Amino acid sequence: MTGLRVQSIGPSVTVQDQGRLGFVASGLSRGGAVDLLALSEGAALLGQGDDLAALEMAGFGGVFQAECDLRIALTGAVMQASLNGAALRWNASHAVPKGAELRIGAASSGGYGYLHLGGGIDAPVVMRARSTHLNSQIGDRVAEGDLLPVGEDPGGPVGQVLDVATREDGGTVRMVRSFQTPLFAPDELTRFEATVFHRDMRGNRMGVQLNPDGAGFQAEGGLTVLSEIIMIGDVQMTGDGAPFVLLPEAQTTGGYPRIGSVLPCDLPKLVQARPDAPLRFVFVEMEEALAAERAFAAHLIDLPRHITPLVRAPGDVPDLLTYQLISGVARGDEEH
Amino acid sequence: MTTPTSQNWPQIRTVGINGMLVSFADALSEPSNRAALAFRARLEREGWDGVIETSSTLASAFVRFDPFVLSHSELHTRLKTLLSEANWFDAAPPEGRRFWRIPAVYGGPLAPQLDEAAKAAGMSATEAVTSLSASRVRVTTLGFAAGQPYLGELPEAWNLPRQSGLTPKVPVGALVVAIRQFVLFATSAPTGWRHVAQTAFTCFRPESDTPFALRAGDEVQFVSISREEFEAIRTRDKSGDGGATVEPIK
Image (cartoon, rainbow over all chains, first blue to last red):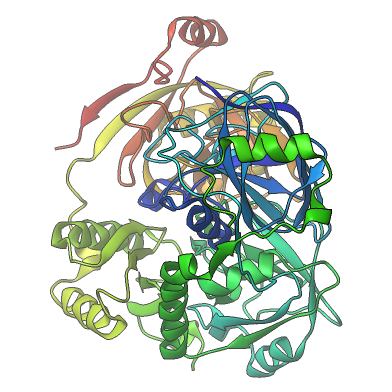
């Protein structure tokens, strides 16, 4: 077994894939990457399937040493990254030769960054997926000294960059009404759409709180609602009236009233918003929501067309030796 | 839109963009839980194309589906047709249910809130153990954590409110009580319910071929055993069953 050795690691780094569907009846939520778009972007950069597992780094990465030649891609929240001291471009793929040191630092946005390996991270499959599910004690956080085993990599391009529109600037997040939306008075719903929110720094894989500029929101039924099924993206109103957006590791059922449900295609923008970036919500009809999801699915399929070779200016090459080391393991045809 | 309390039951509503919920009541009751279980079992048998998974909660059956394979309007029509086929409140319980006897130590240092819960229920500790250990309860739903059952209903005396503060942590296998229900903890977690007994039962076994020990509809009795018996079970049991016995319900 070989792969990437963890020399030091941030506080909340886990192996994630698309999670596990099919167990909600038994109380196990899907889990999987918080930013599924970032998972697909990494897969596109490495020319592999988006069902492979990657490393999800909440806010901070770590220091790693390659125990074999690797291809990597970096996606999601932009983090400081370097290979043997030379800065690495984010939303790009790179060759990492055996013995090289990869450093991934902080995300200035506080969001989720992803490190992908060519061949995926070959973590054990438990119940049809490799995802760590912290809340159900499947797997655990990555720890210092761990080896992230690499799956068989058929090889492919490196030195590629993906044209990604930033999703750290906030903006308008679309929601659909859900079965508990009528628990909120019409003027509360109107006020909800008119309110600017900011992502709280204390989020985790179960959910993230959004802080309103102004008063909180209350359901008319209060806290006597029967515990009912939860969907990822549901916006739950807790006691103090601040909305809490439920994420892949949320509990499967809950008794707090939910004002609506964020479209899956808009979740990446929400979870990756910088804490100072304004977020607003707008309710859309189901037809418009499904059209948006369809467009998102088409965008995922189209990702490879947004990839171009990474052109290095001579001034960007800090160390000739490092450069040659990288070129030495690349196929040699991808940067021309 | 009207408020749920003024609407008639059952009703079909959407959850997110790819969920549909068939609700039989807005409060837990034996008939509505029975209806939810039976209707979900029926949905499983139908096996419609485009259905990703189904589940039941306390009083609802849930369908997650692919709206690009099975449209909202088509699914709504099919659910309505199924609903009209029977009085689901009277439906027979689903097949394949089992009766579990799970050994439990009531009270003492392993379950420190028995005395407090007994007092709140107006009983002596001995009466409380007799009442709780004699109750044959049904798994009304699995939820909150993987494989974690809600079980009911207990006798009326156990209609206790949640405690105002949270117990910071109960261990795996803790049996807690409130609002005429038990929860058997699948993970170590905080709770507002009172910890009255401790089992050596593991509800969620991710490495096993059958990761979820219990299913909605199963019936359970938490048989009272001594601390010594409990320790003996804990020492020898590697299966996660914690000394439980199980038989099919015919």
